Length: 309
Image (cartoon, rainbow, N blue to C red; front, side, top):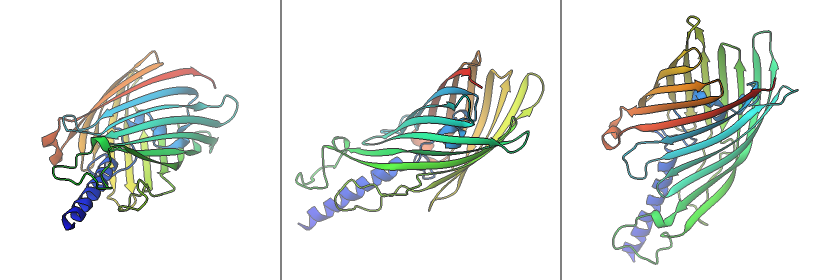
């Protein structure tokens, strides 16, 4: 009997550990999706971006993290956003999916944003996203090991899932050269409940993101844009990403990025006829995990529609 109880506790701890593993999308814990090429789809990180461009656009991102590791995280997202034609407002929506072995997470969000002039050079925008999050564990993919009790209620072969509302808010100051934004995610901070009785504390933590970039026009052909992304999740270490992008004739770009306590990245991309955009990045981890994987690949595709303003 004592052995069965200890084994049950071990299984519960293992499941909680799996949940924590999904929520750690990098070496520094982070629950919201992470993309190296965040600057090419900044609407995902700040709902205030909706309506700040004078055209609608669709962006798709795919991230395959830690290639070579079993059950490595994979993240996909699709977003659509743009302005209203006669008002200083914008709308948008996006969907994302995180998969890590037996666990997965799907979110869908819709956004509204309003922007206004501060002066002849700067505008400011505020936005709100509302939606839901589904968290799921596939018991058939869990390995309990040898000698386990098949009647143990903690062991399941079916799929357990839970739905919960989600929300984010953001503000964005911008001009033709400068961009500064701040946003807060998972505002409700609610618990995820997969069992009738709580097992540990599986809570969605609030995240604060701050971003900034400045565009330097080097000459008629080249422009350089350094950027910074600051990330903080409540009760977790602070993290930042520093990057720089060099663009040739607004068509071809290359860049480098550094993520604190995680990885260095290279970025390349191409804009075809100012309508179709493709990007690729590769992350090389400089932490101990590099021994067990061969890096992270990320792809971005975009379609820019005709100007409506």
